[in-house]
Image (tube, rainbow, N blue to C red; front, side):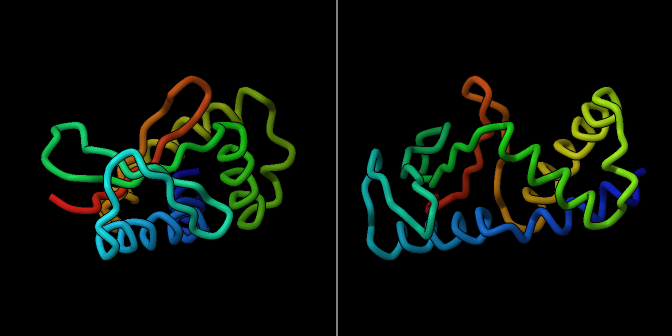
Length: 130
């Protein structure tokens, strides 16, 4: 199952949302967009905000957890058709491992932070400036 998670994470990291976030960070930097402004890239609206330390700016995209789970399971199904027969418990277990791996992968290769919340959402953020 670890190989399936690794391959699904690699596929998921190429999703449009992550390309939009990278482009949004470039656009916010080039246009010197101030905090608390919303910018749109494709289908995604993102907020320019101060980073958690107040040292720079980030762009954030907040998406529903359910939407991201659907995307993750779709990537797994592309790689292994037996995923469709998983029980709810197996899906939850796999998704828990998937989220941890995706967060590490995005941080390492795309400099994107991922965290759960607010509520039933997932927040992705990329640094604009330091």
